Each structure stands twice: as structure tokens, then as C-alpha cells.
Length: 68
Image (tube, rainbow, N blue to C red; front, side):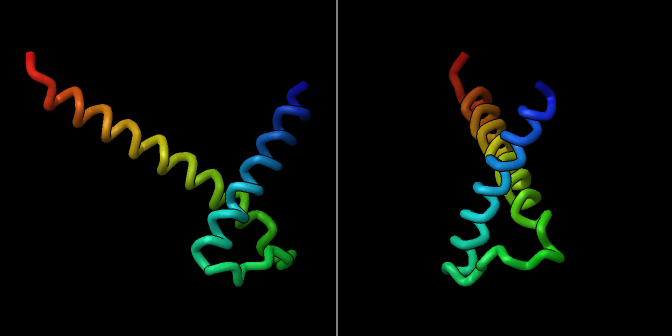
């Protein structure tokens, strides 16, 4: 079961990372470099972490500006 979950996360993070890299490079990133195979997965992970941090900052800002 653990291997299945790890595989799903690997595929999801790699797909998200490839999308981010292709978006940032205007479609020029091909993803075929075997030396940097980990790069799309790492970029996908960083994108998820950055998205969560942005959500937390927005939530903290809304909580701080709410009238009591």
C-alpha cells in the first residue's frame, strides 16, 4: 500500500512539476534530461509547499484584519 501511495505522489508531483517548468520556460522544457530526472518532482513539491504557504499567509491576514 505504501508503495502505491508513493508512486501516486511521484506521478502527481512529477506531472505538476513538468507543467510548472513548461509554463516558466514557455514550453521549451522537454523533460528528457536523464541527469535531472528529479527536477520536475522537486519543482512540483516546491510548488505545493509555496501554495500552502500562500494560503496560510492569506488566512492569517484575514484573521488579523477581522473585527472582534
